[in-house]
Length: 245
Image (cartoon, rainbow, N blue to C red; front, side, top):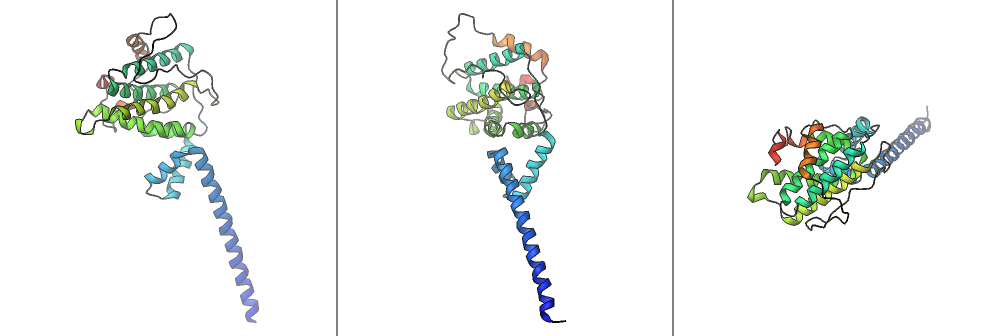
């Protein structure tokens, strides 16, 4: 058998193997682009969490899609939606005199609202993973607010958040809160975003109706909702809602 007859099949196999590898690489790049588009900053966070291991990060994000991609949020009754809007306005007013407590309350409120919409609530990580599939940018910003809220609850003078950081935390929390409040079962907007006051600056309501009673609203919501994950185990929080108050 001549050398040519031996070499030609070998070269052909090498070419075929190279084409297969190129095709796989193209698919992988397309998959990465899809995940980047879907998760945005959450993609970069996952890569950082996995110490730069892109493949591991993408496996994690694909697992999130498998678990939560088909999820559709539960509807909110109009009266309950109004209660959440009133609670958020109460949080914004509270920021004037108690900025740290306002950040804690904003964090709690998002955990409750997410659970009300049907997102898992057994742990912070589980809930934010599920939220990231449908609200990637909002969750990315909210993580910063949650970290600030944890520091505010710990109340350590050597690690206290400044006023601007607290203000930014409320802004970040408000973005996700608004998305959760107005998104319908198919992700479309079903309600206007809650009315906002500028954080740290009280503005009166031009309507003649009296301001909502934050304590009464708290009681109404408390009748329906259990303490959220933010006071559960694994995050350095108390298990009772009163621990944040």
